[in-house]
Image (spheres, rainbow, N blue to C red):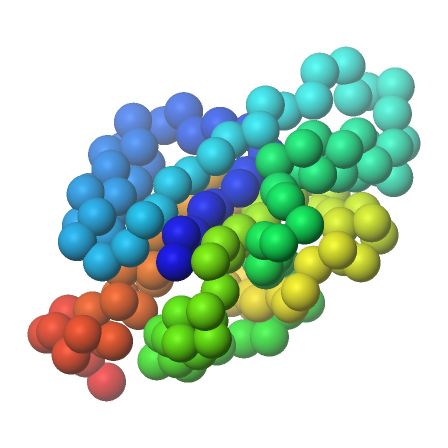
Length: 157
């Protein structure tokens, strides 16, 4: 199984890039994982929120295929513990899912078209985090999930 984290915008802060790189290296032992960044839209001041979400949706659709299992990282998604997240990943692997794509939307979230295309939604927290930080948090949780699945001593209940 391959996993992609598809995001709008890029991470620029060095401390976040360093942290993400640590987990990307660790994850190579478990799974094929990549982060794909879609450039932020330019000239958005003249666009409404819905117009901006619609334009972002066009870019997202260019980066996903019809066979991808798309999971939105959404504040209204299902909240999972780390163990529940690892069980979700295991279920997808055992079920033969080839490609999981986790989406991080732009500043205003997702368009209705993206919600309609998604297969499910999960929330990393009820709190709001910067879009740049979510990449590090997600990479760490993905690593944690695979150490749980392998029975390795990283996660402590």
